[in-house]
Amino acid sequence: MGRLEELKELKDELLSMAVSIKNNIKKAEEEIKLMGQQSPNDEGDYAILINDTLIDDVLITKQYKKLEEIELALDKISSIGYGICEMCEESIDIERLKVKPFAKYCIYCREINEQELLYK
Image (cartoon, rainbow, N blue to C red; front, side, top):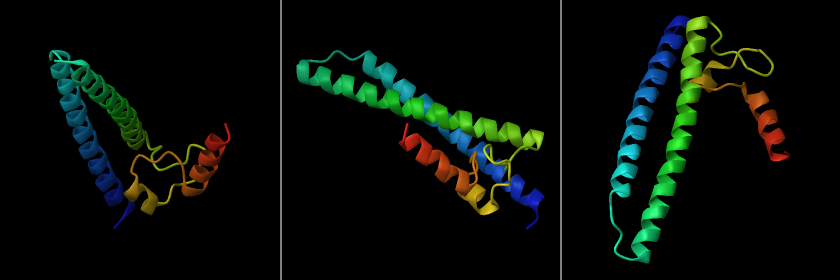
């Protein structure tokens, strides 16, 4: 399979992921809205309601971050910057992109980046 075919497959995967995430966000936001309309019967119900709302909010935030990364990758495909490591500016291995099509770093720079984050 040629590079163009692989890029098309990766782009299709990114688009599919974006649609899926947008659907997940919409469902979670609807759940939060419904939970906000509920009237808890006691402190236990109130605690469960608050906990569920906080968990959904954290998940939505993570989904938005992932969506941003996917949209950035899609922009890079359009501008021919896709598959280039943001740290060393070398090509990201196609096998890595198949696993994580919105990867910003090659495998080596990813490890360096994670180590730096651990020590901050």
